[in-house]
Image (cartoon, rainbow, N blue to C red; front, side, top):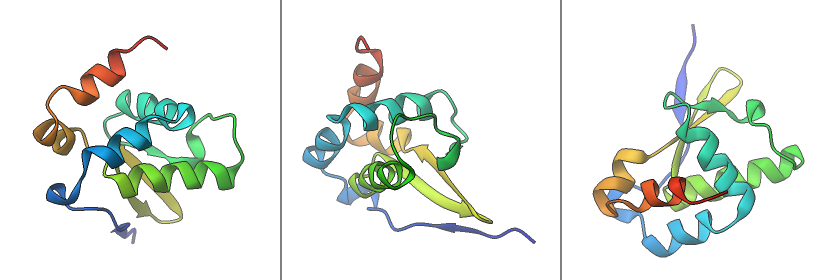
Length: 104
């Protein structure tokens, strides 16, 4: 039997624009957000093709989660991350759309 468990993250009303912008301001984290935007159901952290070590990848994913940009839950031994698109759009309309539309 597979169980799913959400990792700690801020509730919608606790998400702060400063934390979101800081998280999105780092190139690897922006790369993660762009990858997650293409897969709404989420991606296992090990499946993200990134030019960093596994520990650095985990750090970036934790930073995005703690800022409220992503949510992460476990499925067996995998950690699945996905964008909190609905929450971000409700709080900061157009922010994520604008970030994703920016030239690479």
